[in-house]
Length: 252
Image 1 (spheres, rainbow, N blue to C red):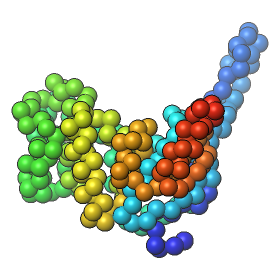
Image 2: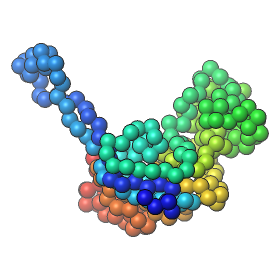
Image 3: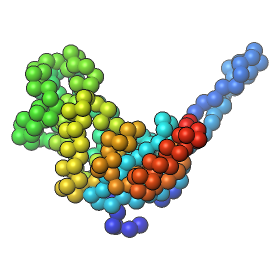
Image 4: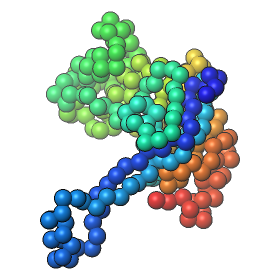
């Protein structure tokens, strides 16, 4: 594998095995009850994915629902083990999905910032130093002493995103965070991504809204039904995706 790239995959695949059930009759029901085995079916969430990402790039991962985008990020983040193939990430990976996981609804926003920051490796002094920036970025200054259970889901995600942005380094893997918040907050997110790229870090970004990341992305990985449909310049992948949508090929 080539050290020029910070992410490199070779035929990366992830398979899930799920239970299946045929049309139920009295006899099939009795067979299922008496049998020690449940019928199984293999589903390849992603299969034979091969692509490379250079340091300092922002690459979009696009495709319809169920295409395998989030599964790919989970494998590359180390949350899931691949079924076959191989991958390498040559810098620290900072996953940015399931925002707010670890928050305590009985704690205030300030308390949760300290909690969330600690879970992501920050010391108390680090958090105190970054606290003004987190509060400003979140746009929730007037709610810092309110308990999290009083927040909307969008407010909780904004708070989590603002906190995570202070800890993200290396390879940042992002799953649809621009869906969080209003236009003003989305602009803040884009500016934050621009700063990340300017300091030489790398972003792998899952999005259904290609237009939102078009100014920052150099290339795109297009997945469809778990397969790699294409990898190349964003305009070319966007055109291919739109063509598949028109022809009914981009679906589950």
